[in-house]
Length: 220
Ligand SMILES: [Zn+2]
Image (cartoon, rainbow, N blue to C red; front, side):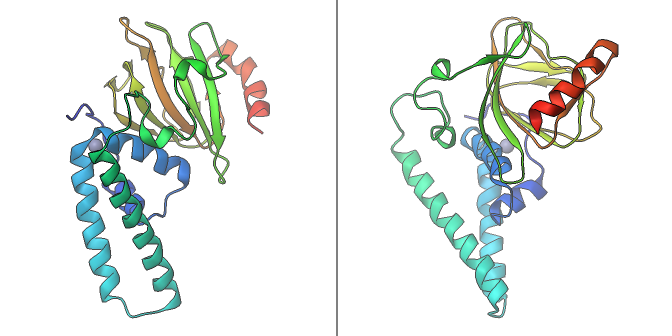
C-alpha cells in the first residue's frame, strides 16, 4: 500500500543510504519508508550502488570507516526487513517511533501550544534539532510562521493543507528557512505529525511578533 504522495528528494535518500544524515532527519525518512514502497525500492537501488562503489575503492582508513557504516546500515535494513515479515502486534505507531512512544499516543505528556495545537517533545538531536509530535485539532490551524532553520514533517495520521497543497498520511515535507506557511488540519479528523525543527520557528504578523522572543528563549 502506498499512501504517500510527497517524498524525500533523491539527495536525502542517498544521504540516508550512506548513513550520513543527522538521526532526527533519518527518523523522518524511516517513518516515510514504512509507508512508501516506491522510496523503499529506490533506497534498495541506492544501497546496491553504494556497496558497488565501496568495493571499487582502494582500501584507506576513511573508506574503511565509510564502508563499515554502510555495512552496519545494510545489516539494520535486513533486520528491519525480517521484522516486516513478522509485524509487531497491532500498533498505529511506526516501528522506528516505538522507542519514544510505548503504547498509545494519548498516554504522552501533551502540552497546549495554542487553542488548536498540542505538542510533545520526544528528544533533541546532537545537532540541536527538536523532535516533537504535533496534534492539530480538526479544522485547526497553526499560526503563520517561517523558520530560522529547516523543518522536516511526516504526517502520521489525518491530513493538513497549506499554501502549497494538501498532505496526507505518510507524506514527507521539507520546509526551508524562507518558506512561510500556515498549516490547517482537515475538518473531519485530528492531524498528527512528527516535526523536526532545526532552529526556532518565527511567527509572522503583528501580534505574533510579540511572541517570538519567548519562542526563541524556550528553544535555547
Ligand atoms: Zn516515498
